[in-house]
Length: 97
Image 1: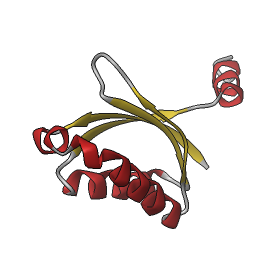
Image 2: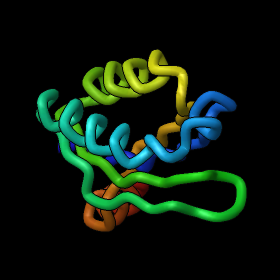
Image 3: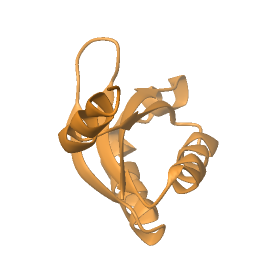
Image 4: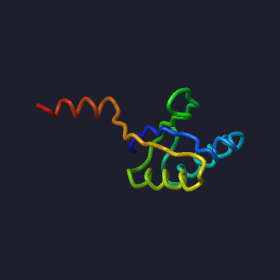
């Protein structure tokens, strides 16, 4: 499984309907689960992003589809970072020679 960090901000529509946000989060967790992925952590944040999620997905295409489906709801905009765990980081650095 590939790890991703998803930075999430409410759109104007999403902020206006913020009380519905927990239901939308539950739906997003189910959607990603149905696609073979999962949420590992979710945070409400203060600062540049409204929320941050740590997720796993089988591959980049699955996560791209998931992100597009979230965006099509009009409540959030996302930015996704592919995340390499520490072991992969060490292997990448070691491969530099």
